[in-house]
Length: 133
Image (cartoon, rainbow, N blue to C red; front, top):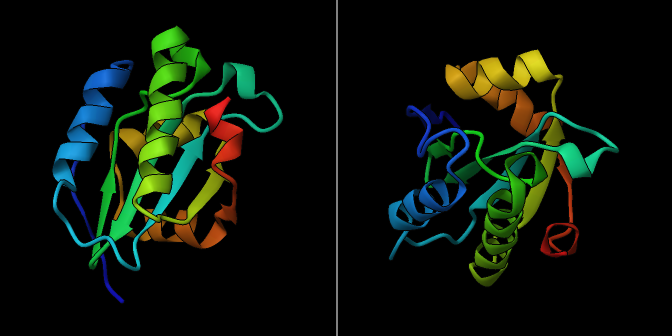
């Protein structure tokens, strides 16, 4: 299947705005068969992690700016928690992929459909519970 990818939604370091943009983008959408993939720049260091989100649905991949997680303070942690609640409520399976910091910055700033496809393929199943605490 061939996917398209647009410029990232939201703004780097603006968790609430980015979450709102993502939710608005999929409001009323049929998300059956969709999945939520978290891209992060940290493995084993969740307390410093940055996250961007990729939702794969209906032949499209929607990427957000890096705006979620502890790196962005309490607001970033709260937005990550709310994102997890939203994804779980939508029935989206969650996956995670870890990139080194420079690749993370590049992919989120200038997403390339082919590279994003490889990241999706390399992603691992995750559990919403990790992001809810």
